[in-house]
Image 1 (cartoon, chains in turn green, yellow):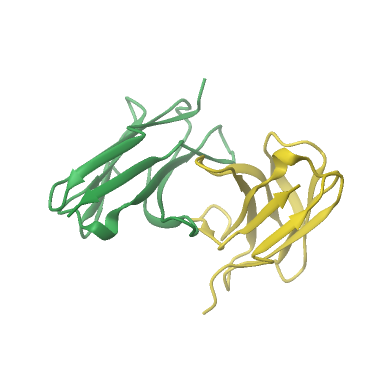
Image 2 (image 1 turned 135 degrees about the vertical axis):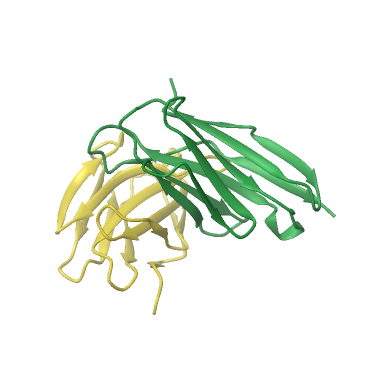
Length: 113
Length: 111
């Protein structure tokens, strides 16, 4: 099965509402979990990341939470704005000592003005 | 401070040909990873280079090869191109073990 599963695949929210994207991973040895935002025709942009010794990390309107026991992590965007519309990817290193960053399939977020 | 750069931005090749893509890492970074991103999909790991050696490889055939130079820049070579190799090729640089930052990508079309 997939090493990193991401849900939902699409998400529409009204401007000002919150958006939550969830990812699960298969390898309990994973210890680094980045989130990328990719606008159409552009490069993936690192927006926040978390390491396994931290349960939550915030950066202005963006936060990531990590539950190592359940092997899932989530991206939370508050007070969404139209410019938040993009595809968001979660990722994780799968396998002890791995340098291979494995990505989820992405979530297309649409923020409706 | 320049970010990650890639060249060329676009490329059109025919089946069976060979292609070389180039990547210059962000200043201070010593590690380069290459990814293939098909339309509508997440990036797929091809391999990672560190200290001029391939450190780890993803599930890609030997037609995909690479190189890292002493200045940390890197090349991705693909031989015997197939139609299915059409994709956006991304490189990402990092300090080993650190966060990865992507370049703008090279869009390859194989006809």
